[in-house]
Structures are given as C-alpha cells and as structure tokens.
Amino acid sequence: MRFEKYHGRYYFGGLALILLLLQFLSGVFLTLFYQPHLLEAYASVQQFYKTDFAVGAWLRDSHRWIAFLIFFSLVVHALRSLLRKEFLNLEKRSRVIWLTGGLLLLPMGALLASGLILPWEWKSYWLMEMIPNYFGQIPYAGPALKQFLIDAFTMNRNFVAHVVILPAIAIILLDLHVFSKARKRKGGLHRYLLKHAVISIPFILIIAVLAVYIPMPTADPEIIPMPLEGAFIPAPEWFVLIFLVPFMYFKNALAPFLGLYLALALYLALIFLPYMLGRYKKDAERREPGGDAFFKEFRHLLGNVLKVGFMRKLAAFLTVFVTAGAVFGFLYYQTYPSPTLGCNSCHNIAMGRGIGAPPDHFKDRMQEPKLDDSQWMLEHWFYPNVVW
Image 1 (cartoon, rainbow, N blue to C red):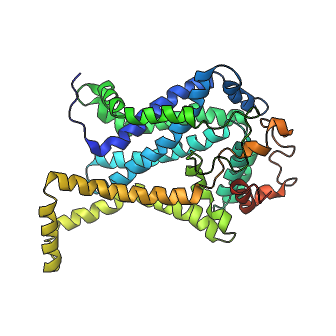
Image 2 (image 1 turned 90 degrees about the vertical axis):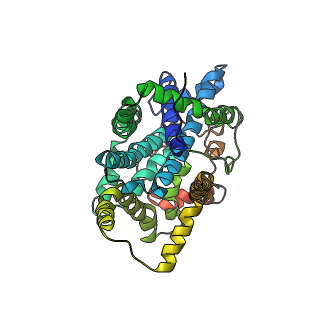
Image 3 (image 1 turned 180 degrees about the vertical axis):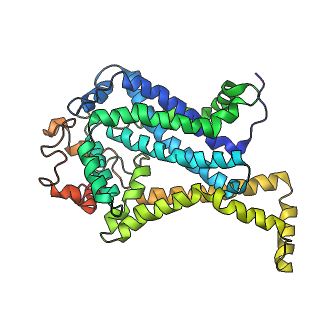
C-alpha cells in the first residue's frame, strides 16, 4: 500500500492514538483475569507472575508502560499545537478539534487514576485515599465531595468506571477530535490508523523491551523490593503525583493554589483559547500593521531566514524539543524520588501485612486520622524509610 505523505507535525498525536488502541487491547486481555473485589484484586493481578503464563506478565507490564507513554505523547502533542498557535484558527471545525482535544485530558486522567487503583496494592490504596483529600480542597463543595468520594468508593464501581464509562466518554471525544475527520480522507479510518501504526513502530518496540527488562511492579512476595526501589524509574504515577507534591511542601493555602487552583485555571484558559483570542485575531487582521521600524525589519529578516525549509523545520523542532524538555524536566525533578516499587517491600504477604486486603480501618478517618494529613501521606509515599 502506498501511503500519502505523512505530516510530521502530528506524529505524537497519532502515536497517542495508536497507543490508546494497544492499551484497549491489552486491557481487554487483563480484564479476563481481573477480579474486582477488595480481597481478590491483587491476587488476580499477581497470578501473571506466579505462574508460567509469561505473556500475561509481559502484557501486564506493557499496560503500565503504555499508560506512561500515552501521557508523554499527549503532552508533546499539546505543546506542539500550542506553539504553532493552532488556537488562532477561526474555522469552526478547528475550534472543535482544539476543544475536544483539551476535554479528552479529563477522561484520560480519570482512566489513569482509576487504573492505578485497580491492582489494589498499597500504593493503589494510598492513591484512593489521596484523591478525596485533593478534591476536598475545592471551595465550598470540597468537603462534601471528599466525603462522597470516600463513601462511594468500591472496587466494582472503580472497575466499571475504568472499563466502561470512561472509555465510552473518551471514544465520543476521539470521534469528534480525529475519527470523523479521518473517515473523510482517502482510504478512510483504516488507512489513517495503519499509517500511524507504521510510524509508531519505534515506540512500540521500546515498550516491548521495557516490559521485559523493567517489570512494574515486582513479583512479590517471591521477589521483595527494597523500600526505595523504583526511584528514577518512569511510571504513570508521575502524572498524578505532579498535582499532589505541593501538599508535601506546604500546609497553608499555597498547596491547593499550586496543585489545584492554578492547574485548573491554566487548563480552562488553554481549552478556551480559540474562543477568547479568535476575535482578537479577527480585529487585528482588519488593522494596518504598525510598530517600530526596527522590530519590523527584524521580523522581515527572521522571515527570510526561515523561508528555507530546513531552517524552518529545525526551528520548529528545537522549539518543541526545548519546551517539552523543560516540562518533563520539571516533572522528573518533582517526582523521580517516588519509590514506584517500594510499597511492596513492607506491605507484602511475606511480612504478614496482606496486600489485597484493606487495612482494618478502611476509609475510616476517625480511626486513621493520618489519612486526612496530606503532607504526611505524601512524605510517607516519597520517603517511607524516614516518615512512617
């Protein structure tokens, strides 16, 4: 089959789409063996490591690595679209694509959080307790929302949300964002997916190798990790922890401001950019360009330099590379000490602290007041050998 010329600007968007499809396929397989029950969930996940079913263990680890690379791809794709000022496109279809792309981040984030809870190891339990604390910081409605999330949580509900409700929402948004447009192209949707599958092969191979050499999590209690094991290893948890780490450093209003209010304000501003700046662009096009002669000459000179195709592409690549590097550098700096595997060192069956069973005072903040202390919860997560 002869493919039309591929547009490299959308490489990471297409990569994210292919990884989503792979995540769906591997998730269907894992669903066949998973038991959504507090006493059985962890054992059903660990069966892949305790038997000779090597393909199952590999798919389990691949599922986690795919989750990490999906969000990596989404961030790069969003940055590239932002730097190219695609939000200034006044066409209705372009605005819909931008808006649905932004809205997709919500079910994707919920899929990540619910998926991290499903294995029901101790870091899953920790996350389940921290999510209500996080949303409890919302003014006025926060305390009621926090209590609702605590009371309403069951493993079955989390499972149904992860495999039915959230994927359905994501598929609707994906159809508006990319599928409806792809169906109108030459060859239709199947040609679009095949083309992007081919160019995604390098990352698919990376996932296959990582799942073999860096399994997540380890196969405890047969292989028991050290308390700080997993630090420096990229994990999908990083994309959740980045919103929680301010609560480790601050106890005052600065923590929810940085971790919740600022993040929400930036998100809303970005997804509604086409509607806020579209009229500004329209008005600017009506006006005669003016300004200082020096800056006009500089822009003219820069335009002549970037007329060369290679220079223009190099400048675009470096801009996205440097920006994405700064974003992921900040993410890494804030989250790399996270002991991805360390919880299983102390909280494992061999130590008599059964993973797969909730604590004695499950969800009871009266019996376990530390669960309400977000700073302690995060310090214990990052530095369990010091704070316990």
